[in-house]
Image 1 (tube, protein in one colour):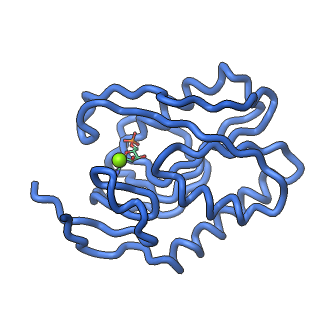
Image 2 (tube, helix red, strand yellow; image 1 turned 120 degrees about the vertical axis):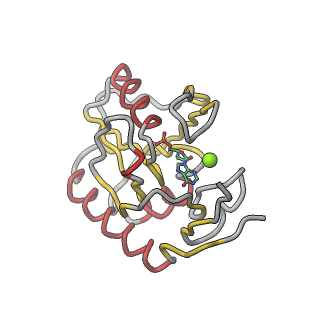
Length: 175
Ligand code: IMP
Ligand code: MG
């Protein structure tokens, strides 16, 4: 069992922010062929809420990135475990993730996607753990900036649990 230390963002706070991000995205991509790419598994809830607030037809797909080794160190190997299945050539791609930490995951996708020939490539994240960034990555839309805390909920896990919490909470780590 883990101990919830503090609820950082409750459901109303998250939904208000999602609404705000969706409004920016809707404005920027109006009249464009938008493809939302959900980065599994953590972005599943954010994606579901965000896409519902975009008032024009969008296409969605999923990608799964695996990372081996310690998530807290730079000694980590990241690879694409399940790639997208649709053709994004000439279309506007928006990568959707709930949390960006070191930035290595998104950096890999920014490196890999251009070969698929999208018309544009951007990212949206709900939570930005900026103090831990090691990779330079362009995040056009961001929700909340958070300090270096380990968080769970709203899709984000600790050992594959707590993804179903409807809020984002910081947990106690005994390190
Ligand atoms: P990055 O490649 O370091 O930016 O890591 C991004 C991924 O690390 C996220 O999609 C999460 O799966 C995981 N992650 C980063 N910070 C946390 C956290 O505080 N709690 C749980 N998972 C996290
Ligand atoms: Mg995880």
